[in-house]
Length: 193
Image 1 (cartoon, rainbow, N blue to C red):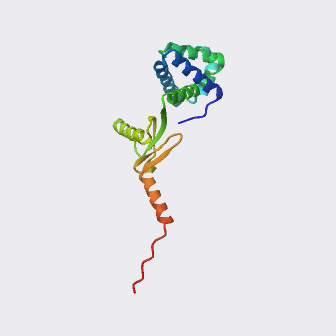
Image 2: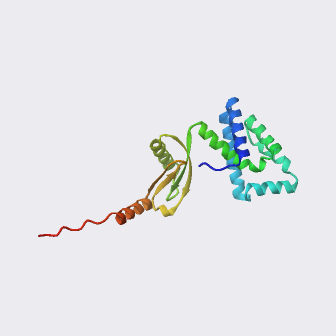
């Protein structure tokens, strides 16, 4: 889903995307940035928000070693160089936003639509593939799906993209049925003569 990023994060992401396209290493850089975004998400789950981790590194005096450590985990030379340059532009604290903005820009470059799919129950990989294939055909676009669960849906799923939404859940069908029953006047029985 489209998120709001600061201007510097968007600019950095666009610069990296254009450089990756120009150097013909888009797939390698994208794989590195996606991996980095996943690693940051894992760190945040385990240790708290990224800005807090950055502040802790600064206070501990090892902040300047963080970017090279991150770069060592990457494989694409362009991604490595990009990460090591972030502290010079004071963008290391915004790294999660830079990664997210890059992924969104890359998806847009490939005409991929982000979609949030919420299911009533957790679904296995086979069901995810089937849901994504059906939605991709229905929306006539490639998708990048993020999943969530909401037992309140009872059964089925809902989806939302930046410009569309759909509800294929039992709770949605019941809500629609209730609305139709309330808004449609009942026919009066015909009097017999």
